[in-house]
Image 1: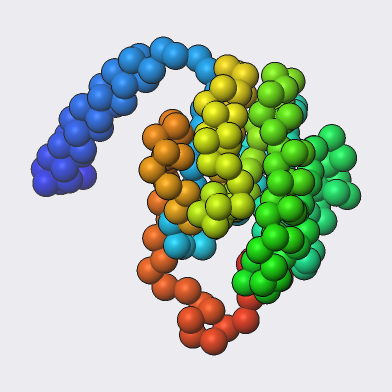
Image 2 (image 1 turned 120 degrees about the vertical axis):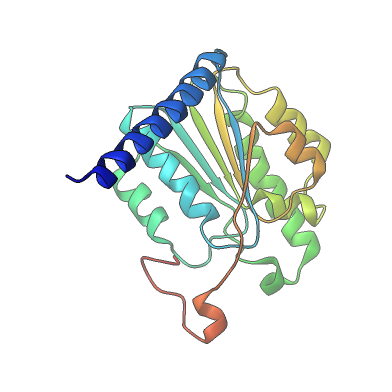
Length: 204
């Protein structure tokens, strides 16, 4: 090893020591122990995929999980197939009407959204559930299919140790404010825009 390499190694070690000190200090400051509310939003691909990654993570620890999917349902998805076949312990419910731009039936969509919320709301009141996923519920708020205040109140007043993941574009300021973590996934490039069909195992 020459002197130049040694100097680089020393600089790297010094930088990493400073970085570690900063990380350790932030970990030390994070002393609150409770469930977290996570919003995965933005126009990019991967919001639901990320939420189901957290489902698998929670199941790996033997935690109790509930998943409620708004909008999706007419076409089977890989995650639905896997959960129904291999994870019967997961409380799983789909609205089952498909996309609102396909149904074109506002009153029917509202009724379906309210029926789905009637399944989701008790999960947010049950302390035995460690993780609850509300997939695509932001659209229900954006379209006015669900009472925003009621949904926000349920999220804010869920059991202290329960974590919740909400996915979908938008959702409004009130939803963002009540969440602990908000991640926005940006659409930089998408295969569909280039005429490539949705891929089984990747997109659904």
